[in-house]
Structure formats: C-alpha cells, structure tokens
Length: 218
Image 1: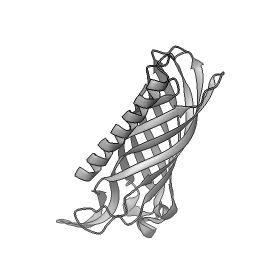
Image 2: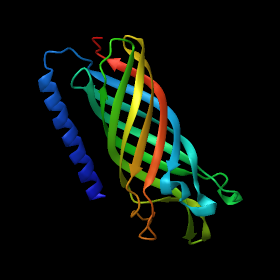
Image 3: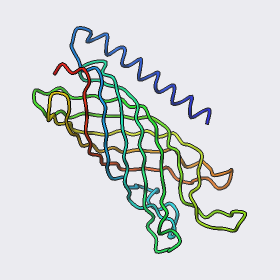
Image 4: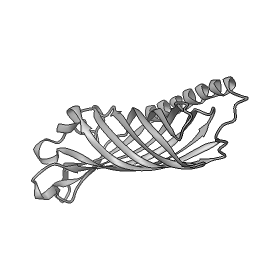
C-alpha cells in the first residue's frame, strides 16, 4: 500500500511539473480555468482478464460511472483528478452468483490535451495513472462454511490511454465521448495472503458524458 501511494504521488508531481512548463510557454494566452466532467459507459474485459474466474466466475462486460475535475495550465492542456466505479457482470450459469458482481473502485490523476480547432468539435488525447481497489466475487472459506462473496484484494496500480471528442453545446458546457484502454497491474495482488489475483486486468472503456467549464474565455 505504501508503494502504491508513493507511486501515485510521484505521478502527480510529474504531471504538475509538465503543466508548469507548459504554462511558462503560454503565459500570455487566455485560457479556461477549470473543467468538471460527469460520465457513464461500458467496461469490457480484454485479454487474459476475460477468462478470470473460470466457468463459475468469468468476468463479463459491465458498466462504469465517474467524475473528474481539472485545471487548465494552457488553453489545451489540463490536469486533474477523477474517480470511476466499475461493476462487471459474471458470465455463468451458476445460480449462486446470479446476484453477485465484480467491482473496481478507482481514484486517479489524469492529463488531457485538447487538439486546437476553430469549431465546436474538439478532439483530445488523455492519459491516467491511479489505483484500482479490487473487490471481486470469490469462493471463500468462511467460519460459517464456504460460499461466494466479494473479496477485497490488495490495491493495484492502474494506468490508461485514450482518445475522445468534445462538442460545445454552449459557451461553457457540452457533451463528450471517449474510449480508453486501461491496464491494472493486478497479477500479484492477493486476498488475505492467499492465492494471487493471477492476471493483469485489461479493460476497454467507452464513455459518454457532460463537461462544464469554469472561467471560460472561449
């Protein structure tokens, strides 16, 4: 856990330094001050993660939702923090897992670069770095006997890269869509020092949401 927090703080420091450099290059350019976004979407497992859990606990596509807040250091470059909640279904005929799910709770730092355009349609690239708190359904031996329940695994570093497009519907707001590829370094994390999670959790995310600008000069 200490290593996870240290790496997260290091990434935040790197993002801040990059932002400061960008700000020095564009001090005389007016810019937005802040952005706030709210989104929802679909999360689909990829690679070996698709087969995690075998026949009884296989990870299925699910939904996620989240929010972000960031500060503009230039008209195009913004950094900030966000949180995403993801709930995966379980692809199984096992009646004992019908009402259960796999979940991720994910705080992160992000950096985003909006590609300059003259119109209302603005594409962007985005990267994140954070921590995934893994709470996955697992067969567990409890004091009252074995059963399926959600187990809190150790947290794992996660990172993503993605592309998106924002469309202004007003001077200070609009809608966006984005796609991200997220990777979680979860192969060695464990639940109570038992068997490790076993695979890197690779996820394809597809989001749609709403963005509000504060202090816009556009």
